Image 1 (tube, rainbow, N blue to C red):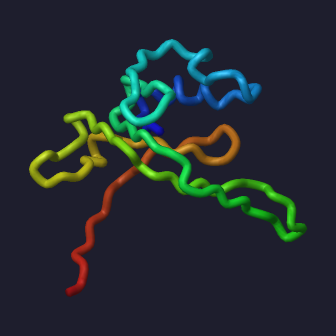
Image 2: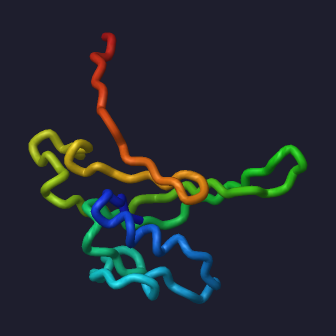
Length: 123
Protein backbone atom coordinates (compact mmCIF):
# COMPACT_ATOMS: atom_id res chain seq x y z
CA UNK A 1 0.00 0.00 0.00
CA UNK A 2 1.34 3.43 -0.88
CA UNK A 3 0.51 6.98 0.11
CA UNK A 4 0.45 8.98 -3.10
CA UNK A 5 1.36 12.63 -3.47
CA UNK A 6 0.41 14.94 -6.31
CA UNK A 7 3.66 14.36 -8.23
CA UNK A 8 2.67 10.77 -9.07
CA UNK A 9 -1.11 11.27 -9.23
CA UNK A 10 -1.24 10.77 -13.03
CA UNK A 11 0.40 7.35 -12.62
CA UNK A 12 -1.97 6.43 -9.79
CA UNK A 13 -4.89 7.36 -11.99
CA UNK A 14 -3.62 5.01 -14.73
CA UNK A 15 -3.79 2.11 -12.26
CA UNK A 16 -7.50 2.78 -11.61
CA UNK A 17 -8.47 0.95 -14.83
CA UNK A 18 -10.78 -2.05 -14.64
CA UNK A 19 -8.57 -5.11 -14.99
CA UNK A 20 -9.08 -8.85 -15.05
CA UNK A 21 -8.17 -10.68 -11.82
CA UNK A 22 -4.94 -12.01 -13.35
CA UNK A 23 -3.80 -8.57 -14.63
CA UNK A 24 -1.45 -6.32 -12.66
CA UNK A 25 -1.77 -2.56 -12.39
CA UNK A 26 2.02 -2.43 -12.72
CA UNK A 27 1.67 -3.53 -16.34
CA UNK A 28 -0.05 -0.20 -17.05
CA UNK A 29 2.66 2.14 -15.78
CA UNK A 30 6.41 2.58 -16.03
CA UNK A 31 7.58 3.06 -12.45
CA UNK A 32 10.55 1.60 -10.55
CA UNK A 33 9.83 -1.12 -8.00
CA UNK A 34 11.67 -2.59 -5.04
CA UNK A 35 11.49 -6.07 -3.51
CA UNK A 36 9.24 -6.11 -0.47
CA UNK A 37 10.50 -7.47 2.82
CA UNK A 38 7.29 -8.91 4.29
CA UNK A 39 4.91 -9.45 1.38
CA UNK A 40 5.18 -10.96 -2.10
CA UNK A 41 4.19 -8.00 -4.33
CA UNK A 42 6.95 -5.49 -5.04
CA UNK A 43 6.76 -1.97 -3.65
CA UNK A 44 6.88 1.22 -5.66
CA UNK A 45 9.96 3.41 -5.24
CA UNK A 46 8.42 6.81 -6.07
CA UNK A 47 5.69 7.14 -3.40
CA UNK A 48 7.02 8.87 -0.28
CA UNK A 49 5.31 6.40 2.07
CA UNK A 50 5.06 2.65 1.52
CA UNK A 51 3.32 0.16 3.78
CA UNK A 52 3.59 -3.61 3.52
CA UNK A 53 0.28 -5.03 4.74
CA UNK A 54 -1.77 -8.19 5.00
CA UNK A 55 -5.52 -8.51 5.14
CA UNK A 56 -6.73 -8.73 8.74
CA UNK A 57 -10.45 -8.68 7.96
CA UNK A 58 -12.81 -7.93 5.08
CA UNK A 59 -16.24 -6.56 5.93
CA UNK A 60 -18.89 -6.50 3.18
CA UNK A 61 -20.97 -3.31 3.30
CA UNK A 62 -24.61 -3.67 2.26
CA UNK A 63 -27.27 -1.24 1.14
CA UNK A 64 -30.88 -1.17 2.40
CA UNK A 65 -31.77 -4.02 0.02
CA UNK A 66 -29.10 -6.22 1.65
CA UNK A 67 -26.92 -6.13 -1.48
CA UNK A 68 -23.16 -5.84 -1.02
CA UNK A 69 -22.14 -2.49 -2.53
CA UNK A 70 -18.63 -2.14 -1.18
CA UNK A 71 -16.08 -3.67 1.18
CA UNK A 72 -14.19 -2.38 4.18
CA UNK A 73 -10.68 -3.81 4.49
CA UNK A 74 -8.88 -3.86 7.83
CA UNK A 75 -5.16 -4.26 7.18
CA UNK A 76 -2.25 -5.26 9.40
CA UNK A 77 0.91 -3.23 8.77
CA UNK A 78 3.98 -5.48 8.71
CA UNK A 79 6.60 -2.99 7.52
CA UNK A 80 6.65 0.68 6.62
CA UNK A 81 9.01 2.98 4.76
CA UNK A 82 9.00 6.77 4.98
CA UNK A 83 11.02 9.01 2.70
CA UNK A 84 13.22 11.23 4.88
CA UNK A 85 11.82 14.36 3.21
CA UNK A 86 8.39 13.75 4.78
CA UNK A 87 9.35 12.25 8.15
CA UNK A 88 10.53 14.14 11.24
CA UNK A 89 12.95 11.65 12.79
CA UNK A 90 13.28 13.55 16.08
CA UNK A 91 9.53 13.86 16.72
CA UNK A 92 8.71 10.62 14.85
CA UNK A 93 5.80 11.88 12.77
CA UNK A 94 4.85 12.55 9.17
CA UNK A 95 5.24 16.09 7.84
CA UNK A 96 1.90 16.33 6.04
CA UNK A 97 2.69 19.78 4.61
CA UNK A 98 5.66 18.22 2.76
CA UNK A 99 3.89 14.97 1.84
CA UNK A 100 0.83 16.63 0.30
CA UNK A 101 -1.10 13.35 0.08
CA UNK A 102 -3.84 12.75 -2.46
CA UNK A 103 -7.16 11.04 -1.74
CA UNK A 104 -9.22 9.24 -4.35
CA UNK A 105 -12.87 10.25 -4.26
CA UNK A 106 -15.83 8.94 -6.25
CA UNK A 107 -15.75 8.80 -10.03
CA UNK A 108 -12.91 10.74 -11.63
CA UNK A 109 -12.33 12.98 -8.63
CA UNK A 110 -9.32 13.32 -6.35
CA UNK A 111 -8.67 15.62 -3.41
CA UNK A 112 -5.47 17.33 -2.35
CA UNK A 113 -5.10 17.81 1.36
CA UNK A 114 -5.29 21.50 2.06
CA UNK A 115 -4.60 23.67 5.04
CA UNK A 116 -3.68 21.89 8.27
CA UNK A 117 -5.25 23.22 11.45
CA UNK A 118 -3.88 22.66 14.93
CA UNK A 119 -5.92 22.86 18.13
CA UNK A 120 -4.52 22.43 21.64
CA UNK A 121 -6.21 19.46 23.27
CA UNK A 122 -7.77 19.97 26.68
CA UNK A 123 -6.16 18.31 29.69
